[in-house]
Image (cartoon, rainbow, N blue to C red; front, side):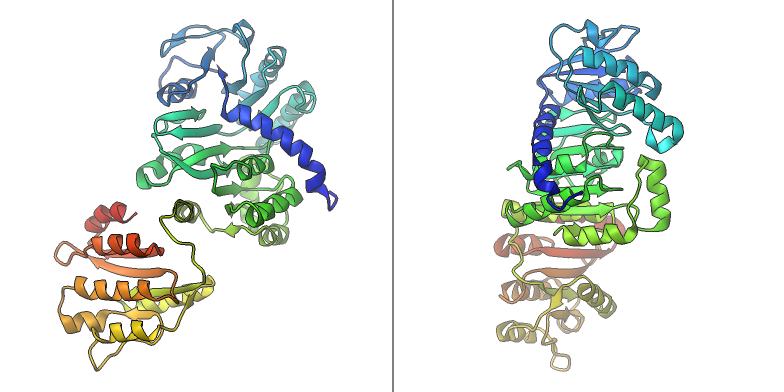
Length: 462
């Protein structure tokens, strides 16, 4: 691909942006493979659309006819009166070519193919893919999301939007995070997990792109970077379809559009590359090429799904004004364990953060709560245990003084903490909550102690 590929492809990306807008905002949807059986995916797709107050018309399609959830089933899309914007296809892969022919005849603009059994299964799947390319005239007659995916989600308000997945969704409130994923898990089971664990993590869109036979990560990335309602974009990929375009869009999002892009890349080891091939049929780039591409893109590279969404939560709070963007890599670290302090200092250094020298005011404030035989450090690693021993076992008063001193220090832009909490020796988490609202600097806590108590207060801190 030429050096000017992004400029050359801009017309394609603009056209695909219009199609993606229809996919996220359809006025009418045909659900091909609809079912009357509550445990089947074809039923749950209908249920998700209805229970989340989809405003458009829903047309279930099943060759046997019938009805469910108050909706009449049509035996073919050709029997549906009026225009259909998109089709959600949830049927065995061998029936998909014929169904796509009917969709093209019906002039349906785009289809979400959720069925698996294409590139990832080898020669037969590749033949099926080639048949679809021929039927669609290389996707000029109808555009495709998937196959091997869980579709698209758009959240407008709490309890309102477009949900095409076949896994029952919990209600989310609208946020400013968009997700692009080659794994259906992020629009399925993990979406449910996030909804219960992190109710404060609001989403705007989720795009599960699967094998990306037609529309790919670059198209959705371009769409999201041009949507003013999106601030954070979280991506899971196993391969790059248009690497140069991906880099160019990421750079533009960073430099001109104030977007934060986080990427979890699968297949960065030889064993991982084998896994991607059997999962989405991805032809993985070389490991060196993938790492170089990530480095050029001005994105945040994360190690696992937990980090992908924890960081999405943090960055969305920056954009909402709940936190102030750090001006420097300088952090404070407050601990009650010397060992935790040592290991954490290594990690702070490894990930490009710094423990800074304390201002004289901060040092003097801390010095007042420490015993004379063990004064505090002159830099921002504060082991509070000597101060707690000196004052008695109730650590809340000591913590309150230390936390505010660090947050007040103009040289320090964030705070990391280890906190001990049990029923007998409870930590007053209101101290952290109130100071965070006052100073709006990010505070990250590692809680340990009584497991049940930690589980109870963790959601409050979140």
